[in-house]
Image (cartoon, rainbow, N blue to C red):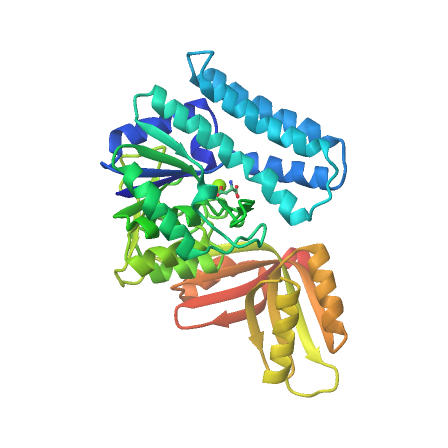
Length: 424
Ligand code: ASP
Ligand code: MG
């Protein structure tokens, strides 16, 4: 059996859903489980809705109306029969949010977020499953919350692998003998059946979990790019497709911020030696990229850009060295404030890190650090990571930039930079 994952862009309107069904009809292996994300940018909208509701803003109902209209518009374009049961299913799903919005927001923000934001995937999969059925595919809709079992860390559910595996093997393996199973990415359920989410862009991870539990032969992630590129076309004109990538390089690239695959996706696949194909839903004939256990290094240098970085330099107040003790204290503060370190460098008297900008979080962290250290920081920076770098590639990305921090290992070079014009 195999698993396909379709992201929001691959189902963003009626035509895209038809295209997706075409891919399934043309390429599906005998047994297939399909993981689908929310339609287009629905998750962002629902996020907005959740915050509006939590803050008691009227806007919540307007946003809900927008989400509703967008989904019913797609349904109207996809289905010939006005009594299609999917119309009721979708209406009922919306009613549940409406009921929620009528109550006051008394639960924790994280919990509320998950109950609202998870609806995007419930909607998209209902529509996709019904459309596949109309299109002659024997598809069944499955609620992932009954199978991806997590703890109650809302917004970042930690998977209970044993529970998850036993449910999937018991119910889904037999179902796959006769049907294409359509289910949600991104969402899970606690042992008490509350809805959780796995973190933004987590559908890839869901797909990898299903693969691992079902010992899938392969995972294919269908995207709007021809495969894994050596840089994000958003930042780079001349990108190259990488036909084959090792699990190791894939993990490194996603760790440094490549957004092509969710960082948690690779480990479950690598552990079971399941290959991951990244292919284009626009040109499904293309071979795409395969990520597997082969070990040859990347054929071309790869670039990862992160903007909106803050470089924080931490110095002892009394000229003492930065040693293990201080470092462990410093890391603890980062951990407590949930700030992820993108790159770091330490010397005798200073420790510097680059982190993503997040005004509230960072100012609280800086305040906490300032109790024991002298803290300097610099905002509005870019972090560039080059895997398999050489001097030429370094020069290319650092033209007209001031390099504030540079960290090199054998294969990877990271630079925190500022536009020369901006620093003058
Ligand atoms: N729909 C979710 C998000 O946008 C999950 C995903 O797309 O992978 O974050
Ligand atoms: Mg997505």
